Image 1: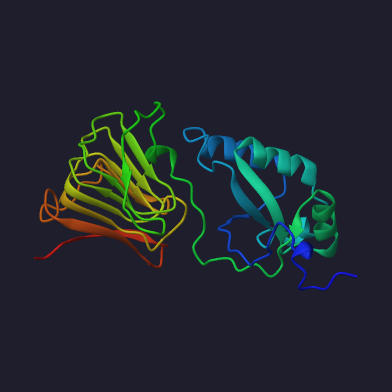
Image 2: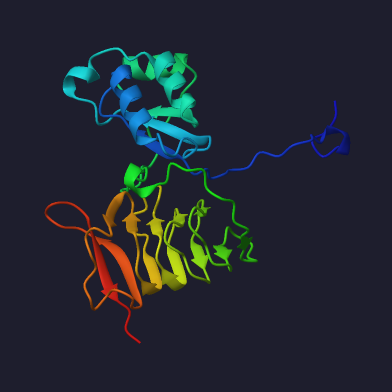
Length: 259
């Protein structure tokens, strides 16, 4: 018998712990027709928004009635996959739901930790139906996933999306252009187009601009358009945008940057 220290017993792999960022889909209904209709409406302008993101299906939001009803996981998984989601796990279900999910190939994520912020798809008003014009970008030279940096002006029709990171723009964002980031957005020039920060639900994200003149501002799905004009002491000035809790829910707060 070979000893454990014998080189010939070594194997061609190692097993280590790993972290994986997951999107949690909190279902408020298990009605497939309702989900199909609402997902189609919300993702009409951004069909590749999820881009094969791994998804945990969370049933905690189901009504008491639906918690006692069976779920057609085959149809549910097919629906989510049709919208570029990759469902891999299930949590907060009854014993029957968890077993049915397991039979459909989902793993038990009962002990997964769900962040307080929820994933929010940018509203239809916050995205353009036209195909975006590609923009050359460069990444900051860091070992981790650094900010995405754009050093050229963005013209109408151009769109930049910093997935899983901050976005830094060193030139003007012209009207009709869109800058989108899962993290913060920094514009070291005039922001005259659309800025969508916290695109996947990060309510801690912020938007900074050297000259705040936007067509639209959005953080974690909460947005404000140019129809709601900025105060004169903010318009055209260096300012930042953040979310602030209120009795009516989170709202955008825009404040001047003081030197």
